[in-house]
Length: 185
Image 1: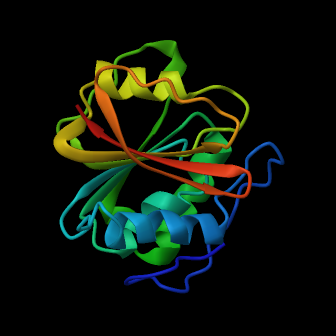
Image 2: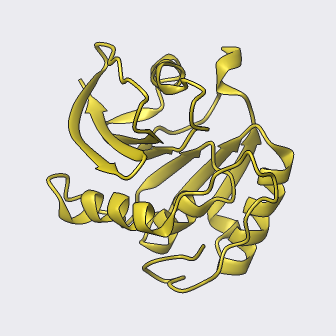
């Protein structure tokens, strides 16, 4: 696993040793960021704020920072993931541009953050049906800017049931993975 582009391009990223944690494949990560920057979205990372949900090693959020995001908040339920993510941020020189929290989004606890995010990246465990939880969490805590983008990576078999708060703008399939790109309605 490595950083694909930007100021930390080529930096190797450590991964969590837990076999139940599936890091995003470089091919899928490259596709995700290509759709954001060069597809119908034309997203500009310069100065944006990012939330990396189910952050694991921090690969997606670190990629966003490497491409110009000014800040990334990393959210995961695993203490081991939290420690590996911090190590990767330090290795890439992004520790000062980040914050972390250990939290299970399914608990319905409020998530307090001062500012909304321009980009939310969610890579939940496959087969756990987190899609509804992600949409509810983002909506309940009012986390996405009105012109922001929510990207969810999930198993291709996961069924997306949109609520009235989001609109699908792009969906791409890569092997057993789907990338879902949403904007606020």
